[in-house]
Length: 528
Image 1 (tube, rainbow, N blue to C red):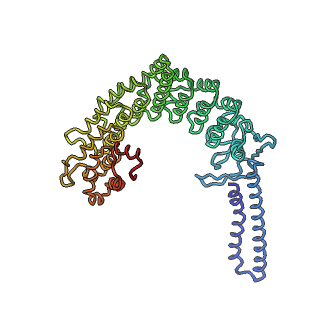
Image 2: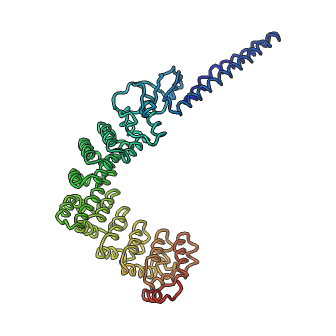
Image 3: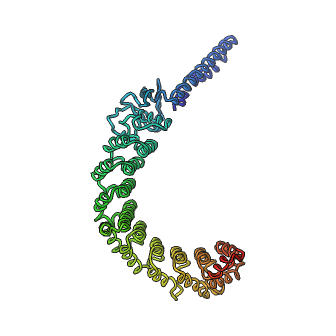
């Protein structure tokens, strides 16, 4: 910036000299040759003087820039011209400021009351007070601190001015430096960071960079640090933080890092907010974390044979499970609610998970082909028992052509694939039987539904999964033969390329039943 300003400042005398030369050329056309010679001599001298001035000014600018890069000064300027981008007017020098680093400890010192615009445009001077955070402005001291910590990786929090720690927290580079020192630094450094950021908690938890500093204090701080920080969080309002884009991260970290008693106390504040949080793009993550942490604590207590503690912890989460069970269908069809239902299936203790799965099974037919509900059904196939899978497979293989329709559906086809991957062998056999049935919708495509589905832009993934996941040798053979009989037709289709690729990998693969495989392995015979 300074180089550009020097160049901009030096262009004025040069431009003025050239204009004078241009004007003098026309005024002196009628003069004598001796006057022309004198004018030419004066112009030559003027050019030489201007060039010399240019070089000396550029060298001075380079020297100043080198001094800045060496860290000996923060700002050195005799005259800085600010430029108004909106009006295009040149203004007089706005300020002159100097700051320096002390050579003994690396601490930062600067002349007080000096701040610079972040972008360098429209620089101005205004007083800074105490440990306050200058909104929209970056002080010269903060700029120097960022430069200093960047050039010196071993710097600690005690090497910078403590009054700017809060300002560092809201700067991306400064925030990373604070996070590093909180994680790797001493106990005293963490307490210093807490002391300086706590008065500005209302700003930091809402900030894109500042919230990470608070998270690190929760994760790496001692019990005293966490207690002090949580007192500040409670004053700000846990519900407000949970619904905020950055604040919800702080709450999630608190749920993860606080001790069992503190987590239980914190979760009770959400008792009347479950549905509100579940429908919120930020709050739903807080409810998910509650389910995950509380259920993990309950299971850990049960593994220690502490049944009373396990029961108490699961009861603390029961109000969340009750709201999910009461609204399972609507939540499963919601963009954010479906995530909470999936976490309940995945992490809750057995009796709570069974309650959720029971309600899902009752309304699963409306969820199979839903944009978000299909993910809930897939999760129930992974975490549920055979009795839950049985109800889903009944819906998939009804005799009214549901299997072909659902296999071609953008969302329901995911459920069919999930059944092939996570269902029992009996369920896979039922799906293979559907694939081998004669095609009903289009008799010209081939003798079985598998050919019709392999040519479909969506259902071809179902056929591919069937070839991958099915272990029944006789049925896989029939399916492979049916597909190979129409290989040319499949090769011409852009949608069947994955099915053809899977057939190619199976071409030289020989099916061996478990008994034969065991016998070969025992005797060492056979070529695999």
